[in-house]
Length: 336
Image (cartoon, rainbow, N blue to C red; front, side, top):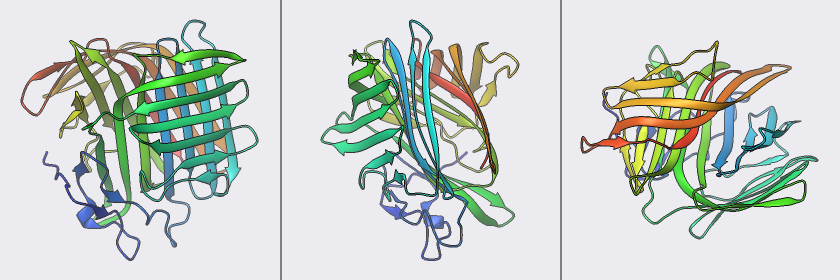
């Protein structure tokens, strides 16, 4: 599969609000202007979000600021790896008023303001600051951005005949070193060395029903910082993938639809993701299972946290070992 690399700034949409054909491709650094999302005439199909996942040796933190036109969804989720306790606060609010989302990545802060969940995501010198409060929980974490660090951006089109009505621009930024503090019930925990943050930034126009797989991993292997980014289902047949490996900040794009083998009757069994450029095993230790069924929205998410092993072949043809990376793999079905 050939995927075009974009190296100059480009608008995701044209003057008519439809997909700009010149935006199709992938990037190593955010170059897409997504200010055309949302757009008049497409109400209900516009989806915008910022998701951050942070894994520390003792805890996992996930935060979401999102708007899907008719609803905004914000969440803070914290998992204690020693006790197995999960603290989950999710707030749905009508319309867009509770969400502040930048027109394009890096153009300004993302914020959620509700009675229970408050989140601030701000770009600072050398990284991104993540702050938030929810019942029993608060955090102040910085996801560092080392000099020269590359992230994977890609535009995925959903074609119907010769037309493209729906499309998504995503940036997946893996292996961001994290530090800061997490407070639970007035006990404060450091986010120490060996903690990693991952960004999922999304701007697009989606069909009502869609499913996807997403997986990520971050860590040190043989003295190198390795980041793993994989996706499936939603990209199948689109001519685009969201597969990549990052080695010491340098990204290799994997332009191949990988095969995902997992047991939906037993999510905690090992997952196998493989192809010509990858042979990976993901061994879960916890399933963050959630369901939502509110009005026109229904979602089912099984997000597994665990450890990676195996290899990915980089652009130089060298096998990159991923043994010991920590991260997640998920299977999602949304009607939204």
